Figure 1 (cartoon, rainbow, N blue to C red):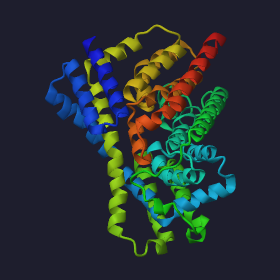
Figure 2 (cartoon, helix red, strand yellow):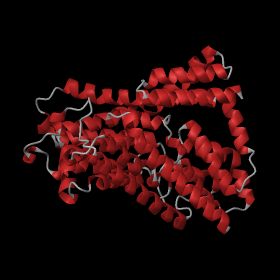
Figure 3 (tube, rainbow, N blue to C red):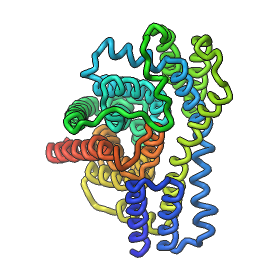
Figure 4 (cartoon, helix red, strand yellow):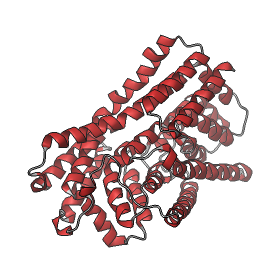
Length: 439
């Protein structure tokens, strides 16, 4: 019991510190210390073994991808390609529909197989231009990013290649298009509710007189274009991102290592951006370009690594195993049990795919022998995984906030509404209908 209190206290410290603007590294070390002490883990083992194992795993797994992604984003900025793409979308859809357009851009990329870690770098420069032209506050970019990347394209759209939809197939023998009717209904519900919230949030911000502001690490001159004829033509601006997307989608059929594939795609996108827009880079300081570009990847991964380190400490505590055992031994309807267990595990780990794996590793055989509809179970647990995984201590949030120049205090409310509250409401209603209808 003391250990569980320690975990809850550690997570509370993490959430409180994030809202107060404390850096991810000192914050997670303080929270990890609380978890270590309350769970009786030797201090040196807790930090030198568990904390550092989680911290270094982020660099080992994602450093090259983040570095190439940040370099690509920097070159898109400096070449004017991001600005050109933004203006083209404005020409097509107008300034009044900026939030919907941004959501759809992110949705197409993630449904096409681009991971959240890559998407945030690819679309951030475009979002900056779109929201600057519409004069909407920057914190609304987080609402669009989270809706397009961490809701329906991750959990409900039939066939989505995101891990949250893939994991159940590995244990249940289902396909990525499992329960298509339920999937489509839930997709429509989540999209409609999220769009309703985003419209309300935009109107509220405008009524309060909130306007656009640039992140501290972005040069406003790159987006303050007086003569659009100086920008690259549309085909040069769009080609790198189209090639990047095709490499990830087509390459995914032949290459199993998605991180390596994404890294190569981002590097190819960066090279193509430079080659197609070579005249734009004449006279620019290449040392600064490379330093700022690659440095952006290092700063982005730092917060992610720190939160993963804290998560590793938590998962190696006795209290965590006690919680897992308690959840796994609950006697419930298979659908309710799967949804509840997935929600708890995803919430604790801050990972939708991690929560799903943890749940299915222990309960897959039980579900298969229960005789329940495995396709329905697949879809319900996928949606459940996409709810509590984005609580304030979620590693991915620290990355997104870093790239967008935001923080928990000014932007997490959008995450909670769109990626926590709405998916939870939808999965609770869907589960209740399936249980009472005897599906």
